[in-house]
Length: 332
View (cartoon, rainbow, N blue to C red):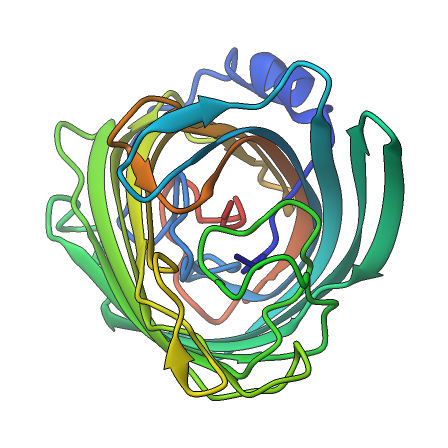
């Protein structure tokens, strides 16, 4: 139960988005200009050379699921939350290929009767290569846009010691404690100029480690995210989305840990804004569904993420006519 990719928090975006909604430009959206993101979404649009963004993610634990799928709400006198910040750099070495690096730090607080704890720590370092397999064609806006990515996560972050799991991100754990390699892909298609459903799938495996002082092996994980984006204008988009996260059993000292496999279902809303001068914003809220059977062996959280960034256009590349790209960070 450790944190994966880190997302974003600040509150200015709603004001910016509300102002930009008044812009009269037609809402023609192209596939690789993103709305809400999946974990492998590009930081740069197809007509941009590089992008630098700063974001943060705030999480509040609302309860836990047991092995039978029964949800237990957080006791009224217990409070657990954390806030992490992330700096991300994306560079397109050629138009279809983006290289990205992400790193950050966080602070967590746990409060319970007789216990008060505040901890800080670094997050893991994440390196990613994304390829636009089927690139946008502005003359064919309804053609699907398809992308794939390969990610390596280096164990630089602090690791929680309460559990051996890794997928559903216990509040207060900023690192995985093991090397992780992930592969994923997404597909999007625009309908009626303004609507764009999307689907993304990612799978990952982890190397054995000794981050808890004994031999440990985290189980593989898989994530599925789907939703739909509405392009309100050439600048602003809104999305509704849902995801499913799964993780296999972990092992400690060569023995499988009973009920260490995990599952959770979440739903969320996101707003993104891409301004012609290169600035972009994203704001998202997300919640694991806090009812029975929507999770197993994990924590449920309520999350708020924000990112602000700047991207430099590449004049030699033909500009995508309108839309947005995925600056909303993964909110695990």
